[in-house]
Image (cartoon, rainbow, N blue to C red; front, side):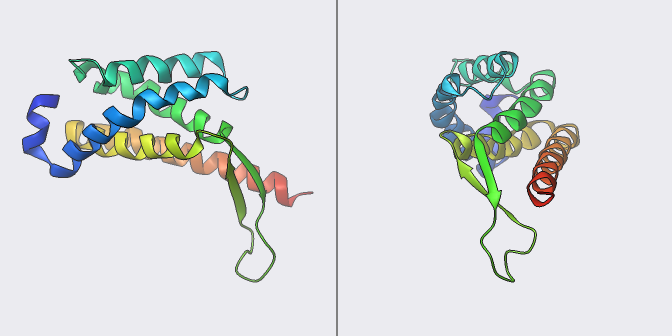
Amino acid sequence: MTMRSLRWASPSAATAYFELRDVAPRLSGLMYSPTIPDSTLQVILDWSEGVVAPDADPSFGLDRLRHLFPALVVAFVGEYTYARAGSGKSAGGCIDLYDRGCGTMVAEVMSLTATLATALHGDEAQQIVTAARAELADHLDRIAALIFSR
């Protein structure tokens, strides 16, 4: 399926694509983050430039997505600071995430790209998305373990 035929396939995927075209260029703000490695940053910036290109199809190829999602996970983890959640019974073993600048935007891009990738590539893309979400959950679990081990 191509980006042109996408609008007929799924209204949610078409909406995700148009929202991504608005949000993706703002990922350039990640250039000012000292916590994101240059190689990760380059993957994200190259992809975001492709999203706004007249032919965005290459940006949503499976090979490109296999590199993009792990890079977005690294950017997400790097764009937040973490703290123990407030006291009380409801906090339990939770941590608070504080956006350092682009974290919320990275999360939005991850979600929109997951919707679009799944619409375009089905189960193959869903496996990539599921692996990225599992990797993110693993990072957050390790951060929480560090916070609560103090």
